[in-house]
Image (cartoon, rainbow, N blue to C red; front, side, top):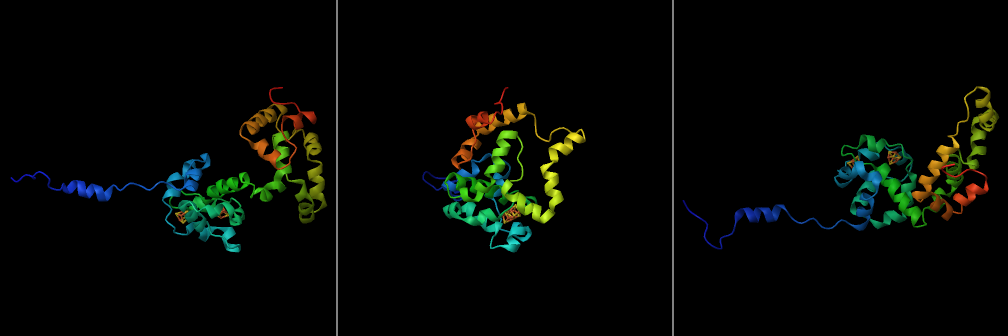
Length: 227
Ligand code: SF4
Ligand code: SF4
């Protein structure tokens, strides 16, 4: 039986060296995306996207606009910082078709949410969401959002005057039917305000000039959390 002499190359070490190469560090944007709690269920899929294009083939936004979820996935996985200045992520309307069809469990819908959040924090994305500020203020104050007032005339035009009358008289109609208010109790709404304050929701709204925060709510006579 022969034995390896001193200094002879270890063939297993040579194989191991070629197999277990050190991974390069993840790009900054990739680390930021992966650290978002919303990506929790999609981490593996995000890192192993096949670029198969199934997401793009079923995406309604891709059908009508110059937009490709497959491209978004690739650029996000590459850590491409130009995504933070790309308006195309705002073309997605969160139907989740891409997520439900992805063979790897990736979700371009969630990637877009995370990128949009980064764009809003950087100021660039504010113009895409400020139209929803009224909705968010109502959410803050009443514990339930509603159609932004700016949209009501357009919806009334589409659905007709009876729809508008119904919207305006919803609470009265519910009362007549014995259904009670559609809004959560003030106690529940107050608890939600605590969460919104703690998670920075109200700060982001205030940064957009929306009248929210404990002071604004108290000024309107709405009881704070815990009352
Ligand atoms: S995100 Fe999923 S469906 Fe889209 S290209 Fe990657 S693996 Fe395919
Ligand atoms: S969630 Fe967005 S990216 Fe995904 S299929 Fe729907 S519109 Fe396309």
